[in-house]
Amino acid sequence: MFYKIGKFILTVVMWLDMILATLLLYFLSFLPKKFTAHWYSYLFRGWCWIFIRALGVSLKLHQKNTAPLPTQYILIGNHPSALEDIGMPALFKARFLAKEELKDWWVLGRISVAAGTLYVKRESKESRKLASETLINLLMQGQSIGIYPEGGCKGRRIYLPFQYGAFDAAIKTGIPILPVFLHYETQEEFEWRPKELLIQKLWQISKSPNKTANYYVFDAIYPNEFANKEALCTYVQNLYLQWQSKYLE
Image (cartoon, rainbow, N blue to C red; front, top):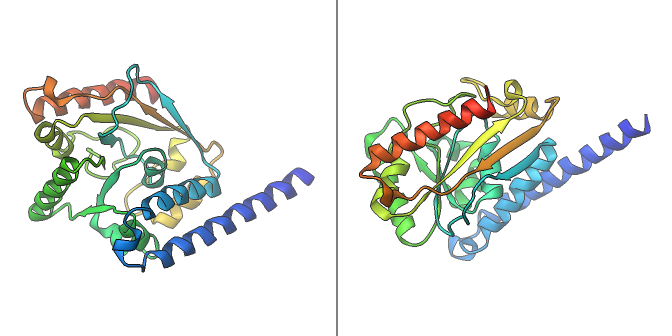
């Protein structure tokens, strides 16, 4: 009984911490960009960890890489859930590309904008082209970027074919691809299905009987070893299928 009471009190404290941190970042997001540009992203990464803790998720980074990771990279990952929208920024410093609809999410949308998230309207060829140019410019400026090559949240199994955006940027800039394979041990509760609301998915995650999230980072893949974006994309797709077979089947 005392264990259950203690657990309940701890949960309440963590969610109060989450609410206060969210309000802080929300109000700071109204400051001029010139004041927040150099430090808001660090607060955002801390907020991601507070959010993960409030959900009760055990986020584990597994370093499967055999060589040191590069200081600049194009981060990619499979996209089965909503959790990676805070899990990946918590673990890796990068500017992430997201669907344009995210900007309209209440409170969270404004925080993501202030954190430097980039947006694309997936059904618009012009928007995709502009996003690609922006990503390449950021890479040329020395920043790291994050992209989900499946083209959105597609479910617990790898969705093919991968989109070329990340691989085209790698070929044009010479910046390596840093692959991360995401594995949630209770896939049923974590998988974000079509028409599910974000709040509904977060509730399911918080009630999951096993809230372990495994993020496996592997060796960087250098684009100068490939003839073109198609060859690079095919190679990476095959790696993800191998990891899927190992960790999910």
